[in-house]
Image (cartoon, rainbow, N blue to C red; front, side):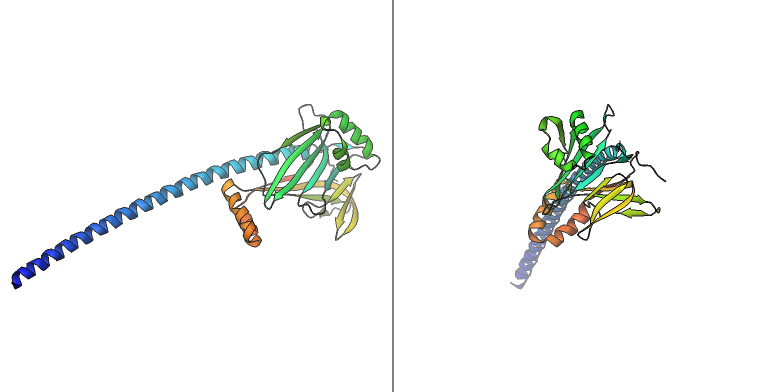
Length: 269
């Protein structure tokens, strides 16, 4: 009786061991399948992210190249200096940039406006408006009377404008103006500062007061930032919950493109 019981116990133990082996095998197989799917998913996400990065960098460079070509070809007016204006409005997180350029196939002077408008946090829409020859000439005549470039663009008819909207939203757009002053020092304005430059003088706001300084436009520092669709969606969710985290996320994940642009028309002492 004792011998049978012992064999039975051995048989039960053997079956239990076999069952344990089977369970371990199934666990290992399941783990391998899970990890395999995870690795495939990570690889797909990595490829998607790499593709997005390539597209973003290409688009940023294209936009920056267009802005750079426009600014390099700024036009001399009357007193031998370019006319350049940045306008900002209360309650708007964006600005408008106005100047004259010969950056086209015919190299004819044209008045240009860049519109930078924030539709939501971390999403700026960029457009470029150029006036036809007749409207540009009218604006040049009015500028002698200290007429606002912004007001002219607002009042001129749609038939005299050609508008191009850039497809890729920007996470940020900053332009910093540098002025070479008479004493040889360089004055850097805060990025996107409201200002008007004309006839060797720049007028800008500083601590709520209007300041006028004599000097020449020296160069522009332009920085563009953009996010891929995946990160843009994440930023949108973060911004609704925690703005501080959203700002950190934007700084960490946005792709940057920078250029220091020297207008060809500016004389250097």
